[in-house]
Length: 359
Image (cartoon, rainbow, N blue to C red; front, side, top):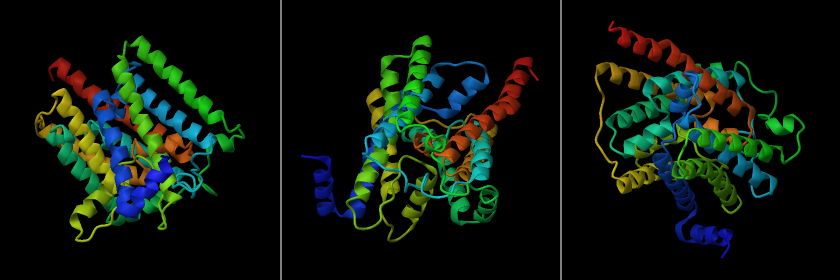
């Protein structure tokens, strides 16, 4: 039985909204398991890089990014998916939002000691810091989308906007259709070389690539559903800024609507929980003190605003949008690295140096 027939059967049996949410749940499960077992974390990678080391965290993150890029571009080249009408390529992109939002997000990510996707995975293992930080992130994201911070976010995002739809970097450069595949293959080889150099285990590599595969799977399954449903179904993939805000409203609304995002968040939580349970890694954890709590909650709020301004979080913009070769996604990702590295240099390393001196 072909996948299209399976999806059609689910649509007839469950309904359109329920099937789309189930697809989000399935993609979330894959991401949750892979992210929990691989310890995938952009913050840890940024800190390694900022401190002059290309270590195992960098190898895992780069492999995830490379896998998402390689699979997504291969699906596009094969005609299996078309992202021209997706949010990343089907409308103008905000250059100012990508840069400013990415910088703010990167700073918040270092303060909170994890990006939203990582916080959700940690929350599933019993980390109370991640649970509360994730809630603050969701509230800040919702405020930035429709609340008190929506005005400032909109004005900053409107400062510099692409004149037409957000450019596909390969197409804008006049490169052939297979260029994205070649780029993904190049990143993959670089990731594998780093993994070999740092003696990263095969298990971590498999799960790290699983994170990137989940992003490509999100593009593929939503594209397939968009061609089968009567109601408009957005072609989208992994992200945690919009879905976190949507999930917050979902649990507070008497008659909430189901969609891909509403299935994604519990799917990630469940996948990470099951992976941690199987590995015996469920454990209640909290903050080390008031200073740690202040940092985490401030960082979570900054990430909420920064992600909405940038058009996505480290997963939504950095992996999903990056795999589509969207200009502003790559700008946002670069700004997140810069913001995280700068915050680590100005705060964490100074604090560590002061502690080493006993001051």
